[in-house]
Length: 155
Image (cartoon, rainbow, N blue to C red):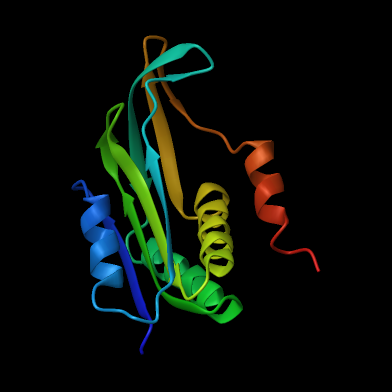
């Protein structure tokens, strides 16, 4: 069967269960589906967060995510994958990102999902601004995210 790859960047929310069903419906070659949902937190290190605003470079962001999706498809025996990333103003409790990977076996699905999330967290062309009682500030990259992503480049 042909692998299904879906990449979307959108302002509106998404339904995780519906996206998993769309990827796996009628597929007898899929034995494992792994999903990761990123949700806006209401606090960070004790400071309340009112909202996040995510910006992206239209066209470039989709192309870069597709490039990483193609790398995942080449590296692991996947039956398909879905990446949805929201942009705009997102408040605590709302979805930000969804990564779904499907494969015959769980290990490939888990590893590919981690690979894609590590990329999205460190290198995808998104910019995140946080709103709190102290004002607004751009969210800086974190060393532990870079360390997690670095494992995919090691031999």
